[in-house]
Image 1 (cartoon, helix red, strand yellow):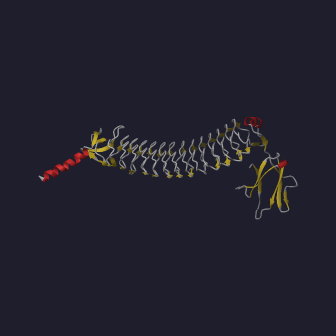
Image 2 (cartoon, rainbow, N blue to C red):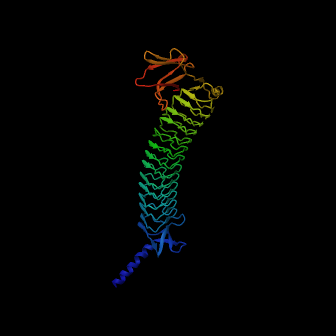
Image 3 (cartoon, rainbow, N blue to C red):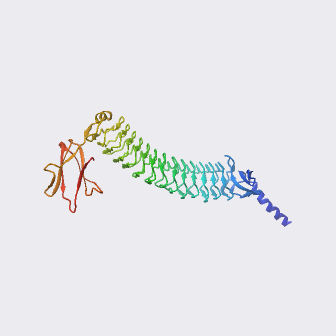
Length: 468
């Protein structure tokens, strides 16, 4: 009788296991889709086959596979190629899941709102992680995404509040919109060069993020990519980036310094608004500065606008704090309130004809506007901008007795409009000039005499007059 009992026991074990799953046969007749787990919970292993049919898919449509909240861990066999939409959504007892490389696609909402999930491991081979796949897995602590993944879907890991570490392997090409939004425990991030697309709001409200290394494959920083990353202090924008869209760094209140590379042609609305930047240098490659691009950056004391900029948008520099601003030849339009409430602004220097100017563009401290000889449109500009204008025309007088050497000093007289501000600069080599400011002064009574000792060990010295 004992051999008979042993034979019956061996038959009963797979029968009991198979009875834990409902399934449908796939159209190929040799594989199946598990549609429901009906067991008692605990550690669950998805088998490679049931009743001689290979298990290839989990989930049918948008219906969850698991109805038992007692499932604590999940191991999926390497016969499975697809985890369907919402397959394990709201599996609120699940703490651990292992996904083999055979799974090419993890569907939308596949593990959405698995609130106790602390570990999800992906083997190399997974190609796609769907929209909201692990969103609201609020206890997921770390994540390694293999290089086989080409697409990380929208909101795939949003609201994973405990996610402190993300490793994205080289090979991943796309990070979707809102993908890591509000991963508030994430501190550091490296995006490999294989990534060419980062979606809108991808990392916004990652409030603990302090350092980001960006891919040299990315060509555009999309809308609000790092918005409200309040502790972000360091980020290098790679030279592959041509566009910085709206609100990319808005409310990154710890961001004090950033370099905009000369590959960038566009800076969108609110791109750097409400940051701690102290200086703004816009390269010549940029043609447009969007509305509010640098608004409410009260620590900004220096603004350098590139020679390619044609348009300065509404409130672009609202509330910044420079003393002097040079408007280059290329600028033809300055929007409403562009420099409003820049209370430290005293001088604005224009290098070409008067641009079109919006109402209140310089409202606040009422700076003086200086224009060059031969330029036009300043009477109308003065009326429209409600600014006083003054001719800026300093000239080094070379044909007078004061020009040249005297008592081991080299000096010259500078003449021009009374009380205009000037800077005397010098360099030693015009082929590779490095200009050094020597004197910052005004032409009291329309004249100023400059002199300095002869420079030892110098074969020559060149001088010029510039605006402060």
